[in-house]
Image 1: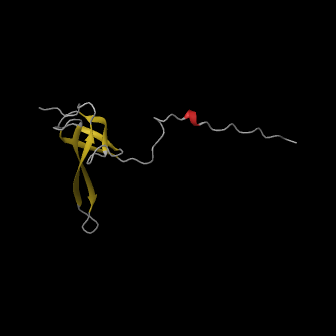
Image 2 (image 1 turned 45 degrees about the vertical axis):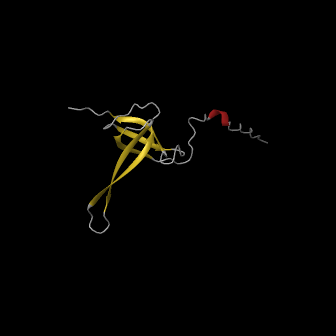
Image 3 (image 1 turned 90 degrees about the vertical axis):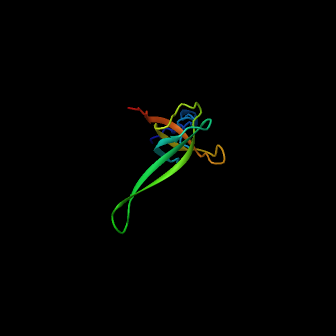
Length: 105
């Protein structure tokens, strides 16, 4: 008669809270268009979708207020923003990382 060894229980401690995904949170890339507010930047995300009837690509832009804790992002920077719990009345995004720094020529 063969015995089957009991499986070790999967420990929750192996997955740290930082690495654990908290549901699905959208990530978008956009350009900073305003940085006048304290700890807040306005990011404009441009989406291109195909028109179902004519097949033409139509661009739509959406502006989001995103939390910038250190006030390090300036107008023209390309940043990645991620959904977050409500921080204020209008802010529901945080700036995750800098994609491209704005260089004035």
